[in-house]
Amino acid sequence: MATPLSADRLLRALRDEGLHVVEHRNWRTNNRNHKGPWGPTHGVMIHHTVSAGTASSVELCYNGHSALPGPLCHGVIDKAGTVHLVSAGRANHAGSGDGDVLQAVKDERAPLPADNEADTDGNRYFYGFEAVNLGDGKDPWPDAQLLAIERAAAAICRAHGWSQRSVIGHLEWQPGKVDPRGFTMDSMRTRIGKRLDQAPDGSAEPTKPTTPTKPTPKPKPPTKPKPTPTYEPYPGAAFFKAGRRSPIVTAMGKRLVAEGCGRYTVGPGPAWSTADRNSYAAWQRKLGYTGTDANGIPGKTSWDRLKVPNV
Image (cartoon, rainbow, N blue to C red):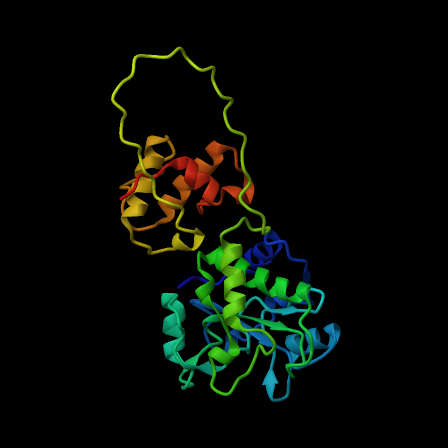
């Protein structure tokens, strides 16, 4: 569960993910908030427009039509991979769908149950992206467009601390829907998951220079070898989400305190929290990371250098 991103945070999250974003007309105030609540948000839904042409598709999603008033999504992703923002509030894209699917998305659980009911208002809970495509199974999906879908969904997930399991297709939500048609949502979720294990621009977490090796000291008399310490392997960025409980989180917090990076009032404890994220961000800064590379979400390089003991 999460409070919806403000217009500024939504725009920043998308651009930080390396996307080219166009702000269309009065997108910040173009919404359906007068028809129902917007939030709490639980996931991202992907659609195709059943239309051709960027300009006409963006206008359609901004205004809607007589049978379905706009806005019809939050962002339109064109064939070239540009995201055109058309709303920052409640949008008319998801309609009524299956409450069991919503619960699975909230739990980040797989596989999703069958969408055989339409008993839940999806417009309240999901961000929506419409990708320009005829949806006939023949209209191609350019690599740039698929990459933009991956990046847009990952940007929202990263902003809320969600995994790729928070991203679904319209066809997985509402009975009778087929969109997006032309690629599978399982393949897209795999792409999103890999991206969430990387820095926001899609690159691996940058490697920082190591301390120069000191001269080898003179040999000392042999001593009894000490047991080789073992450390927790990197569990992946998706592991660190709000509410996660694990002894690994406690062990990580103790190491951060030992490194002088603890930002805890009480703890550390087993539940991943804002204090853990702030502490880890201090560790990343200690290693030399800055900006979005020091966002408090562990990456493999910084995790390996922290050396969290096995629990």
